[in-house]
Image 1 (cartoon, rainbow, N blue to C red):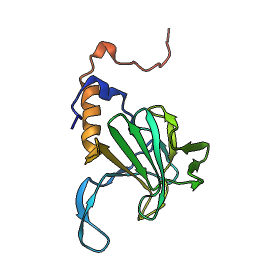
Image 2: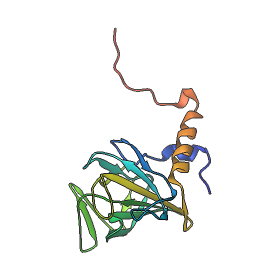
Image 3: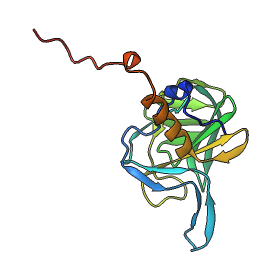
Image 4: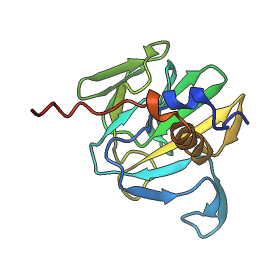
Length: 170
């Protein structure tokens, strides 16, 4: 897996603007029926309607509307596919819409671009983003990517870090 602390990870964007916590991890977990089942993603709690941003530049590979993921998107970024589930909005004719967002398969996206809003679609018990990730087709833990992003920012030389524009006082 390629999620090591490298300079390139600084380009990644945390996908939820209004982070409220993690509600379920990647890997095995107890399902609604009390049985162990695989969970191929990270559940990120956020208030209903919170903005969701694209993790990395890429293109929409698929618009999803089903009973599990609910409304969702699969975005291809090189060897990575990032999956966003339980979105608010609607899907009609292969087009996902939420507020000013309108996305279809093949559409190019920038990193950090608004791609939707937290909803309650599909199989969910509360508002959150299910964020899944595959690398070369194999499921991986998105938390590893988040850790690599954080580590790359920690290792960034102080001189090259952006300083906030707070104005100038005399």
